[in-house]
Amino acid sequence: MKKLLLVKNDEDTIEIIEIMYQNSGYEVIKAPEQVNAGMITEINPDIIVLDHYYNDGYGTELYAEIRANEQIKHIPVLICSGHYDLDSLEKVSSANGFITKPFDTYSFLKLVDNLAL
Image 1 (cartoon, rainbow, N blue to C red):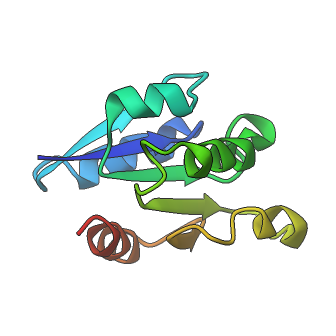
Image 2: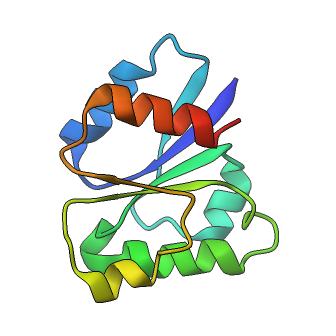
């Protein structure tokens, strides 16, 4: 079973994603509150869904930590963002995928499946 790590603060969105993936062959894991690259290494997910503004902008820093960590830098990262701050988005421009919020479920499912191959 593939592991999908959700790094998001929005409990409603987390619940929706968990429901979407109940019978899909993915284990959905909600990241701990103060997640860091070391914790992600222990979880060893197949894909990471990262909220761009997780914990008031920490998502951008966490993305940099992920890409700098030799053990997890290969893991695909899907950035979710409802903000269009170009300076901030540029810092995560090398992400494997982007999806804007609110997103439609079909597009989200398809993008995750394509990235987690």
